[in-house]
Amino acid sequence: MYEKIKKEISQEYYQQYFPNEGQRFVAWYLRNIHLRDMTEARFDLTDGQDDKQIDAIVVDDDNNTIYVIQGKFIGQGSVDAEPLREVLSSWVQLKDIVRLQDNCNERLKKKLSEVALAIEDDYDIVFELITTGSLTDSAQNDLAAFQANLAEADDFPASIHVLNEDELKVRYDMALEKENPTIRHSIKLEHEKFMTMDIGGTKVIVAAIPLKDCIRFPGIKDGTLFQKNVRQSLGLNNRVNKGIKSTIFKNSQDFFFYHNGITAICNKIQIGEDGICEMRGVSIVNGCQSLNTILSCSEKVKTLENAYIMFRFYEIPQRDRADKISISTNSQSAVKPRDLRSNDRRVLTLKKIYEQKYPRGYLVTKRGEEAPADRDKNLVVDLSDLGKHMISWHSQRPNIAYSETKIFDKYFEQLFKRDYGPEKIYALSYWNSEVRKRWVKENPLSLNESLLAMKAYAPHHHLYAISLCFCVANNIPEGVPSPIVTFNKASETDMVSQIVDMAGSCLNSALEAAANEPLPANRVFSPQNWIKTKSCLAGIRAATRQYFNMLPALPGGKDLKEKLQASLTMDTSDFEARWAAD
View (cartoon, rainbow, N blue to C red):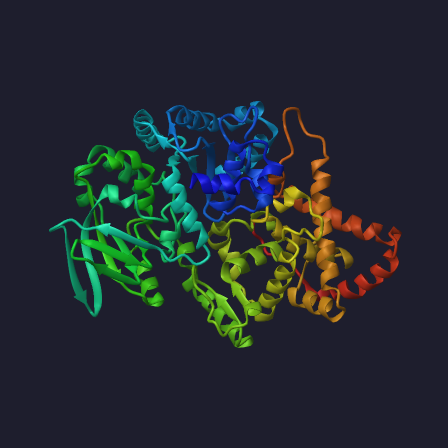
């Protein structure tokens, strides 16, 4: 793996943007493991003078997790305890973000603004030490001690993981198939500690598995092992997970009796004569919280010789049956409403009316679900995306569209309580698809690089800016245009591309205007912070209004304004009040 990484970081991208092998290694990790694109990786990297032992920070809004990364690219030698102490130092400093931001470099200051908002939203914090070497014995002991300290810290809960060459290879292989992961795993079942049976034509294995074997399951931290689960990790600081940590450190021999067990569904299970259980297409449907907590205490767990946990393995390839089992078995931590929105009657009604209107369309309502092969991909809409479109367009709050938790929990009633026409669903999806065509590495709109580094949420502001074009053109300061009317007007006049490009330019101008505003001493402008606050919304509206005012003065501007006017002019009745979302 070391040779592979060394070869790949010799490519032009790494040589051009990163001055040393240490930064290139961290950038390689961001690109290949966290799947950040070229621009995002550059903005995530904070290494340099006054980096406060933080080489990179990734704020993963999809998984509600902050990754704080420290890299050591040392070949295949040994790593002592010093890098671990640097990670622990960064944990201590992050407890006081205000003080840390006053004394760190410019790149870290910008990322810390984003981190502060994420912490307010209860994101998990994960420290990752990545290295191609191996820890010395003393470093292993220190890692175990640090994990214990973090596990017991109620004031600032976090976890720490060391990714050596072997773990990097596993993560790399998993990332290659992230779009459609099929996990294979094998585990040694101990004699007289398992039994097999057939129940209703289903192969079942019940086994007592050593706790230290749990941390070897692939796909725990990145969530791919829990594809069929109704939720991902709820963090380390809730009551149940605190109890799991306490049992690991204080009563590990009784863990088997205190824990309800873990349920795994597999496409295929086979046990050999040597007791090796081979699993294909394995997914944990009950036990996500437990396995993440066990992994966060990995060094302690590795030392436990008489700690077991009960596993139930079911051979069930049918997706609908697996979904029912996933919901039914999750009772240890209460299933929150957002975990079950796919079965909400309002969602099911939307799905029904949309697919009736567009027989070749499909509304994907469950995480991990795929549309049938015979459906038109241009008519396939994901429920999660629909919620983000609605809150950006109808609630005019693209600054919170990045958070599925808020959309499907806090604001679900406001967004989905109405009878929403299927043609509006299609129109929003169409506008969004046109927006996404501009957010590619070729950067056809010449967007500011800091915008391109925020592809997880900035495109929602682009969609919002499209709605503002119709508001400003019709002098409607408060209303929201009907999506289907805007789509029809733009399509009939063949001005879709022009409107989308114009909205993107207005978003770009709003960001650059905000970046040029004076700031208090010792503060820097953070695009990631700005894009998630309400202040950006007024800036985008002002930039849109300014664009229209300046248009006649531009070469060919009068003709363009006339064409735009024909495309954007709507009746007052085509506007409605904003849906409240705050």
